[in-house]
Length: 165
Image 1 (tube, rainbow, N blue to C red):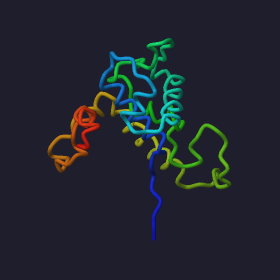
Image 2 (image 1 turned 120 degrees about the vertical axis):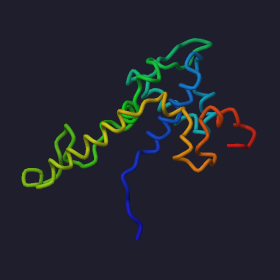
Image 3 (image 1 turned 90 degrees about the vertical axis):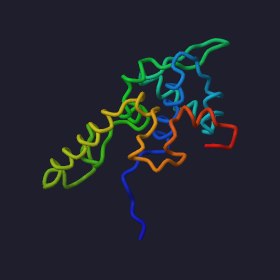
Image 4 (image 1 turned 90 degrees about the horizontal axis):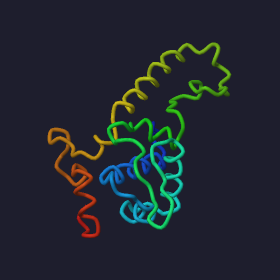
């Protein structure tokens, strides 16, 4: 039996990855085409996500021949929660926790709603504690197994095109 799990949308995952790519070279102006190429995320998806990040105030869009995107804030001031919420909206583990009206018919008699609120806040707080600058650091040796996923993103990006991810 396959179980569903709590997980991010692909767009939110891609959003974190794209923001990491930009944070690696924060002074540069990044084009959507260049980001699509380096991340191997389709250009229409990259363009959509970059627009969401601009609207959320996380990226600045520069027009013109050498236009593109730069961080609107230092990487240490952009949380993973900020990025996820820019793409998916508020972190909300259950339907009854949002600001909008719920379609749950048990909302007034639910015995666990307050506990779900507590859990939801803990998840949001955990995502808010991790900032973009931390995401581009390497994984400590005691956590990872030394495999390719433990490489700092900077090394992965420099190996791109060599077949050595």
